[in-house]
Amino acid sequence: MQRAVSRDDDFTAFVLARSAQLVHFARMLCGDAGLAEDLVQTALEKSYLRWDRIELGDPFAYVRQAVVNQHLSWVRRRLWRERPRGSAAELDEQVGFSPAGRTAADASVGIESRTAIAEALATLTRRERAVVVLRYVEDLSEAQTAATLGVAVGTVKSANARALKKLRAAPELSSSYAGEPS
Image 1 (cartoon, rainbow, N blue to C red):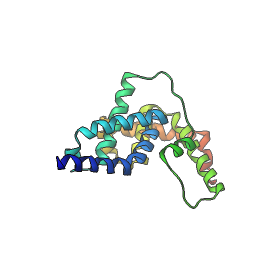
Image 2 (cartoon, rainbow, N blue to C red; image 1 turned 120 degrees about the vertical axis):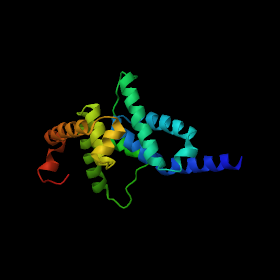
Image 3 (cartoon, rainbow, N blue to C red; image 1 turned 135 degrees about the horizontal axis):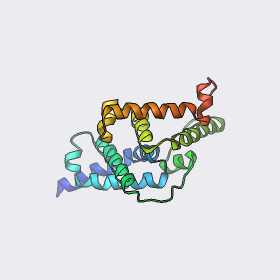
């Protein structure tokens, strides 16, 4: 019985340490704060059942993959009809993001920037958004992104190229490309 307590403690420590990061990743992936929380919750539930095997490897990578798999599964089944949107400020509040040492002006610039990014990401298809988030937010290689999504590397390259073209043309992000501070 001692191992079960240790397993629970290890899992609890992981959830406390990484859940905010997982929710942020899921929010970037799906574009919806409520759905992101559901994705992470479901991925953590499934991961808990296999925790003895997972904790020996890279638990964050495993749970992140579970979030992606759950997202793809939900997209395929189209379980939702409405897609409410929250602001970046609401997301930061939900995941406990608190930029220490920033002035009010600095914080507002960050909120405007995150809102612009969220609006631009909302224009992408689900596959394009997943590729961009995995490549640039999670810093995965093209091969790792392809393996995570279960597609060919060429599919990742073409989706990435289309997504970047759309993002470069997005009016919300135009000041970033014009050399103006964002």
